[in-house]
Image (cartoon, rainbow, N blue to C red):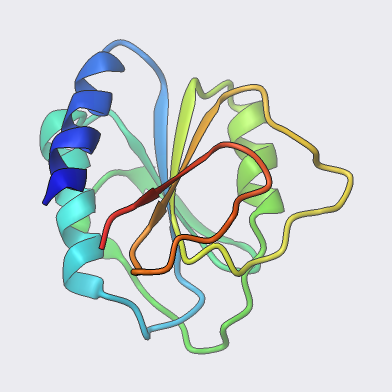
Length: 136
């Protein structure tokens, strides 16, 4: 559980900052226990985190709660709306739990906030920007 200590440290360093956690809900073929544990960590360490559930659209924006994640089965995911939303809302840091197989608008070359892709898989894909962290 090396990722656990790393994320704990990252959250502690961001106390007083505006943080969001996005969860890719485009498929139910995910390690849901692992994802719930990550959300619980945010809930306990940084309870003012905003939780965003999204696939090809933003499904919900609410205070972080691990028992509220609803997954879908269509497999379509786009990160553009969440990234644009985080920018508009002035977030300092966005953590995004996803396998990084979704779509990002080709005009989007970077973001002006910290972005961490939390990948719940053994394979760590290349990300277009931000930093990928394996949490499997």
